[in-house]
Image (cartoon, rainbow, N blue to C red; front, side, top):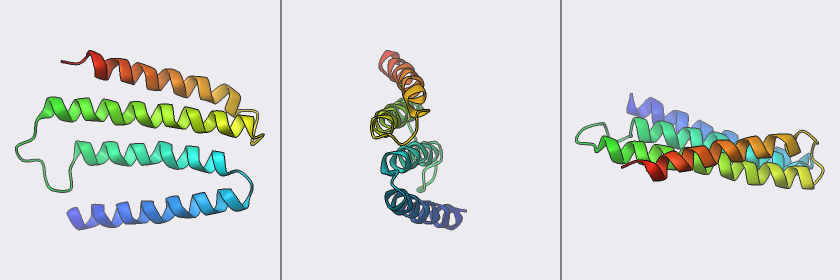
Length: 116
């Protein structure tokens, strides 16, 4: 199963690079970066839940804390890039999406900082 996950991660990296290049060429680099960052945080969360090295002898509390921090970073980073997309004129919808992303990120950050 580990080989399949590594293959999937490689495909994700290739797709992320393709999205960034396509976004740059189409004049929407902020939008492309927001999507890539958001989904990269999802990939990182999956690796935290099921590490490539196996699940033996893990500190579950530390894993949960890292999971929340990665989730918060993904939301807040995407919020910043969505704001950049809105200010760059890449779509009016981003001005509405950015605050929602920021709230989701701040809620996850609050949970991470409040956890024991």
